[in-house]
Image (tube, rainbow, N blue to C red; front, side):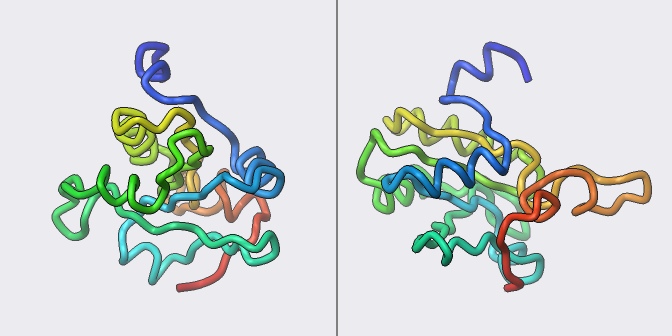
Length: 144
């Protein structure tokens, strides 16, 4: 990632760093910006052991994968505290960069991208979940 892009949001954190923030900062919020299909069929972070729930707001809308025109409005409604740490999670840590940038443009001062996303990068066989990501890191999650 280039420095220019990185300056448009608060920065990047690993999945384990994101967990530590969520566990230790009561105002921090995990925003899962994947699609409804991904939440239903792939799974989602389970934050119940720290008495939180991820907020699900799609950055792009399945199946066309167009940018959600209501994204900034939905983020602001779900997270009115512009100082709170917002941790954005997608499949592999790419869409979540754009989501963090958009949240920053909407006035949120602490919008972070979670590196590697929920599933991580593809391995040599084209499979996800074996090379990084929330699940690979052993963090709590549950099926749809």
